[in-house]
Amino acid sequence: MTHWLNHISPNLRNVGSARYTAGWVEPQRLIHDHQLVLFAEGEFDVEFSSCSYPRGEGTFLIVPPGELHVTRMTSRAGRRCWVHFDWVVPRETIQRPLISYPPKQIVPGEMVSAPRFVPREVFQGPVPSPAALEIHARLDSLWNTERLHEQLLCRGIFLQLLVELFGPGASDALKPAGRSGRLAQAIRARLDGLADLPIEQMPSLQKELQSLGSSYAHACRVFHAAFGLSPLAYTHRLRVERAKWLLREGGRTVAQVGRAVGVENPAYFSRLFRKIAGLSPRRYAATSTTDSADRP
Image 1 (cartoon, one colour):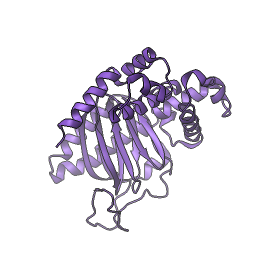
Image 2 (cartoon, rainbow, N blue to C red; image 1 turned 180 degrees about the vertical axis):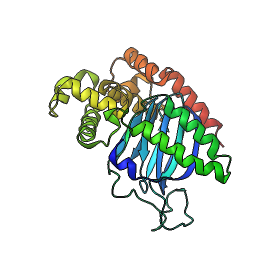
Image 3 (cartoon, rainbow, N blue to C red; image 1 turned 45 degrees about the vertical axis):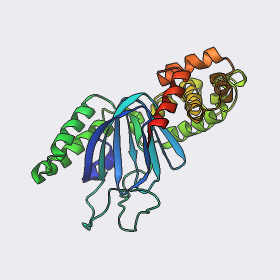
């Protein structure tokens, strides 16, 4: 087992799961503890510390406390499961909120940071087996009985879940990001710049990623392990996400939106948009307009 995991004594604060539909966005918020999120279905994007963490089905992420972050759906529907927790039981038992929404800030003493023995990297990666989701389902069921006996049992079950994610049978991608994490972030930053260019003018992805100091195959493996999709799929998704904003704003034709996000060929833009968003750009624009008109 990973050495630091031997020293934790988790304190659970909230357990749950939920399904989401297209267009769901969670408001910006601050959490007072750590939040383990298992992404069971669909695709999400989590943003904090000026970084974006696209999360696909069968992946996980631990959001640290005190970070202003936002989560949104990037697919038509999805489901995620979560556990709010402290790595160790706090020395002082105080009443503290679970979540704060701006402009409210976290008051000193209400946030419990990770102990020194827990690595400071952002933990993320693929969920190694379906057993993790099964363990969470049991955890969710017991915790929400709100009976003390069951909630105490949940601490042991949560340890089992962490062992499933970080134990000796888990992938190396589950370890703290370290060098691979820095490479993944460098790749993402490079891709963000490339996605600003028209597709026809994009330089070779292979050459661009090799210029970061590793082979193209290794760069692709590191990026996929970190974010759950290939570098090329990331650039396509980024263009489509930008197109969604323009379509919701209205005032442009589908062809104009396609050109604005770097896709000159309207037919290709429509195919790419449908593949990622699940419906045509014209239908998406009409649906978004209808949804806006229906809001009070």
